[in-house]
Amino acid sequence: MPEVRFLGHSCVTITEGKYKLIIDPFVSDNPKSPVKASDIDVNYVLLTHGHGDHVGDAIEIAKRNNATIIANFELANLCAAEGAQ
Image 1 (cartoon, helix red, strand yellow):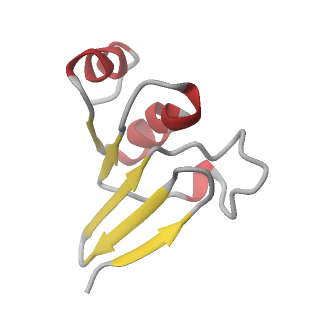
Image 2 (tube, one colour):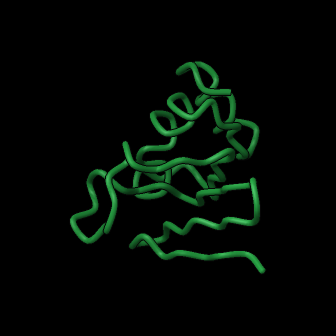
Image 3 (cartoon, rainbow, N blue to C red):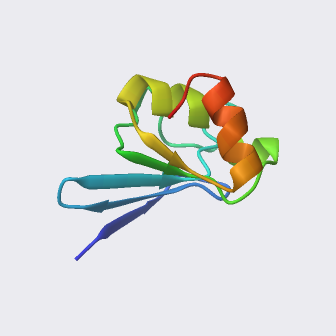
């Protein structure tokens, strides 16, 4: 059974075995987030759209974890230009 954890605003993590996904990682600028971006360990980062309160720490988290970003074409290209995969 997957474990789902709410991290505030629109951010959640979903963990199933070795697979770890974060959705819309708005963490650092969210005073209600129970975690720091540097504490997040994931394989995938899913972005629903390009607003700052949804993209948030996505590039930092993806680069540090060597995680794959899943997003629409334009947003994926923007993340790739910043060094994320």
